[in-house]
Image (cartoon, rainbow, N blue to C red; front, side, top):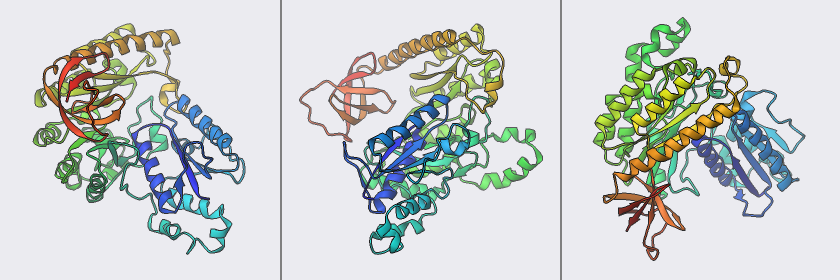
Length: 461
């Protein structure tokens, strides 16, 4: 076994974990297969957040078997963790389904040894020095480089127990874990040393970094006795590392030009968090909120931990503290029971907030969630129409947001060379107008925005 390929579905967390797997396989002595090459090992890192994602994951597994029929396939990620009928069958020695993340590194190493008689005969020693390394890593090792990406992802949190009615994640990633701050800082330093100028801090529920539950402290009285016990005392909570502590420490890492924070829960936006944003110029003025709806009635059915009034208050706070921040949002349309009035409340919230981009998710039934049993399902055409309306509004709001920066300078981290383009501080695309400008990917440059466009702006270097 010499070569491998990795197929990744899903979120930033999965992308980060796939990068970990790739690095680990290289440490074991394997090489990434080149384009057109049949890999000896295909790793499919699956997603199951929706039924469609599960179906795509199974398609990737089948595709891997066609690309390399004699190759070994390893199926990991969220789909195996569901342990449901959606899981692909194990069709013999060539397919290995790994449901646990805790021993993923050791499982992969043992699979490689098992499929290489020469290595197996000598217990994996002397043939590949890297093969002995897996004993050092009960879990996957920290990243030293986020290969193939300009911006590096840094996963610092895993797990969710929020039990939002539409979400399957608490069933596949139930264990709340936070990477110790010291380890996160060392990993960030390694990523900077590898040449990454921007790090995106991410997690399954990043707002819960340093906590034992994603539920906010104000919800303590509503927890069951055993949950109150597990959550610890107030004094214990105060001693724990918090997201604000982590961001402060990351902001001080030498050479780290940019820090971007992935999705945050609206209820966890605080003065303390925004103090950190304001204190460090290398933390980007961009906050992505998991909004989901602008109607309190819908939010209640979703089992979210805030209502529309609190949501507006948090957005007002962000705007008051930060200089023209980019506020992007996830919104689900067509949730069971969502009336025309509820949808209109969401539209009005989006316009009032001036979101710079909205990721619109048409509701689809996810087996295994509470929402799958809710009454009041909407017709597919109604959901589709609402999604189209909100996407159009997103385009209009994005154009309006970018317009205010025409004539101003911004810094751009170049990621594409044809055309030469990248993202600025506020997370919108900037294309360089000078065709003869010789700039390489990963360059951080200052430009002047000269013209707004439908999907970004044009700037002069």
